[in-house]
Length: 142
Length: 146
Image 1 (tube, each protein chain N blue to C red):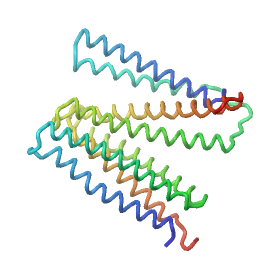
Image 2: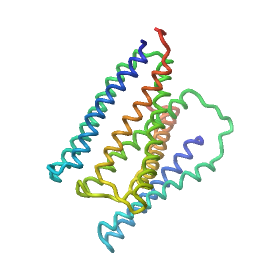
Image 3: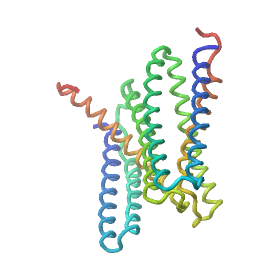
C-alpha cells in the first residue's frame, strides 16, 4: 500500500470519527429539551470555535506531511480536492431543492439542521475525495 | 491590467455597491418599519451577483499567454473562494441561530438565499485574491518590495 492510499484511508477515518461525534451532538443540541436556550447557544458557539481550531491544527499537520509527496502525488491530491468541492456544492444544491419540494415554498425547517447539513456535507466531500484518491493511487510506486 | 484584473474589479465594485445600497435600505427600513422587517433589506446584496454578466463582456487579451505564475494565482483564488464561501455559510448559520431562539423554525427559503449569498461571497473572495496577487506583481515590477 503506497502513501496515497494510506493518506486516503487516514483522511476517511478521521472524517468519519469527526462526523460520528459532531452530527449526533448537533442533533442532540437541537432536539433534546433538557438544554435551555442559552446552554444550546453556548454549546453551538463552542462547537464551531473548536471546529475551526481543529481545522487549523489538522491543516498544519497536513502541510508538514505534504512535504513528503512528489509532484505527481500533489497534483492528484489537488485534483481530488477539486472533486470534493464539486461534490459539496452539488450536495448543497440538491439538498435545498429537496427541502423546498418536501416542505413547500412556505415550509419551515429547524435551525439546528443547518449545522447538521454543513457537517454531513463535509463528511460526504471527504468520502468522495478519499474514494477517488484510493482509486487513482498506483500500487507500489515507491 | 489584464482581463482577469478587469473582471475582478467589476465584480468587486458591483458586490460592494450592492452591499452599501442594501445597508442603506436596511437603515431606511429600520427607521420606518423596525426590526425584524429591516433584515429583508439585505436581500438586495444578491443584486451584486449581476456584476458577473458585464465581466463576461471584457475583451480577451491579445497574446493569451498563461504561465505557471498565472496558474498558481488561479489555483489560490479558487481555494480562497471555497474557503470564503464555507466560512460565510458557517457564520450565516450561526447568525441565524443566535438571532432566532434555538429550537425555533425558520423558513425553508433561507436555504437557497444562503447558497446565493455564499456564491456571491466566493466570487468576491476570488476577485480580491486576483487583485491582491496581481497587485503584488505590479509593485515588484516597479522595483518596490512585493
